[in-house]
Image (cartoon, rainbow, N blue to C red):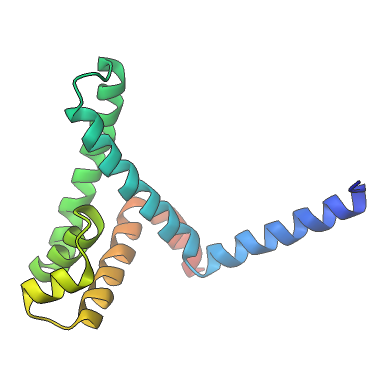
Length: 134
């Protein structure tokens, strides 16, 4: 049985872990990755004829917001970095496939994908990123 002292210690440890993750930018990157997965899921929902209209409407609103964020990302990153990000994160292509298609090194794919992911996190969660800078 967990006593009150143990619960308090557990809460403090969890809080410090969250703060540490927050400081390192890990939380905002996880939120961004979650939004990318939700974006892909919502795109599939919109195309599914068996989904009720109200669910499609909510999915459409989310997709519109993500599309706007992706347009801003494209403007910020340029063609190549955006293509790497989009092909890897949205279309699910492997690093090898992207590297071969663009005639670049696999490590370049990884670096550009991470840079674009961080930029997208700034677009989607500016308030968290500003807090991380303080």
